[in-house]
Amino acid sequence: MAVKIRLARRGRKKMAMYDIVIAESTSPRDGRFIEKIGTYNPNTDPSTVVLKPERALYWLMVGAQPTDTARSVLSHEGIMFKKHLQVGVNKGAISQEQADEKFNTWVEEKAGRRATAADTKTQTKEQARAARLEAERKVNEARAEAIAKKNRVEEPVAEAPAAEEAVAEETPATDVAAATEETPAAE
Figure 1 (cartoon, rainbow, N blue to C red):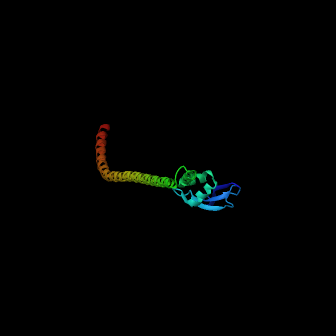
Figure 2: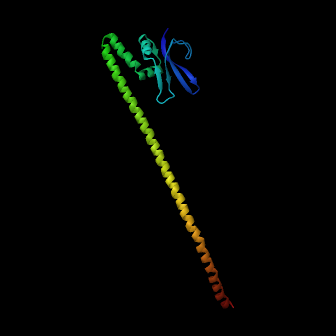
Figure 3: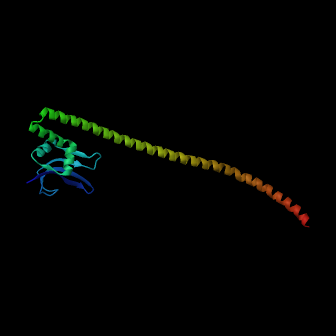
């Protein structure tokens, strides 16, 4: 029987988690498996992988074939690279010390890339937060200016009716005088 390294789904609807398992290729997806070597949670940012690297390497070395997603997870964790180096050691191309040194160098570089990605993500979040605060500040300033303008308009409006009353008082007197002048001429 062909042995596969694959994912077995678990978890609730729309929040799936996966077990990384060793299973016969004829077994159902969530059915019988030989060994559970880890878990994969794609719902977190970044994805969370808990893996037994020794067991994963052992199964790869004895011929277990990973599925595409399992291969991606194993590659991301460095298991596929470690297998590649171990095959080189078995063939006599490099020594075990050289392979371990190359793998440790890769692990350090990977940690640096992860830290850089995390810093970039943090900076992006901070920039977005600052932009939102700046936009909110501008809206608040515009709102405060509109309120201040409205308050300034209401104060002169309070004075304007008094001026209109004074004009209204003068108008009837002028109208009376105009009416008096016209009346004698009409007679």
